[in-house]
Image (cartoon, rainbow, N blue to C red; front, side, top):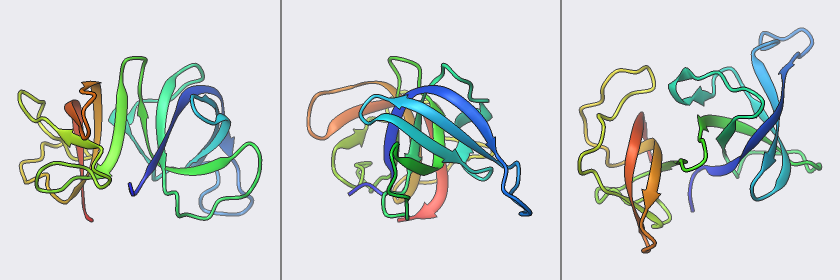
Length: 165
């Protein structure tokens, strides 16, 4: 099973989460989106969540949000998830956040990375990553994949989080 679950859709509203008398007041965003697979979804985007390229998200943007499916979540409608990462994904672009093994296959064996001619992997702070991708948490964006299982994907962008599986 993948460590993080994606939800993809169009952001319809963004507001600031103001929590009374806490250090986090004003640091989190509350987004409403029309997801492609769940209908309306609310996303809590904390200040420490990674947003690909530091891009400011706006209403009307298509984006992918990743959340921990084992984290506590309120049983409400619409569903509400606490995002750990977000990636703007215009139509024709997809994103994945997962650990990859030494063969560059993800945890649920549905995707394998084809590294021919790819861009330089980067760290979240924008610096280049020169190490081995195996065992690292990777956020990748891609435009095309094969229909095989596992699907072969040629990433457009790779962000390496130096955490171990």
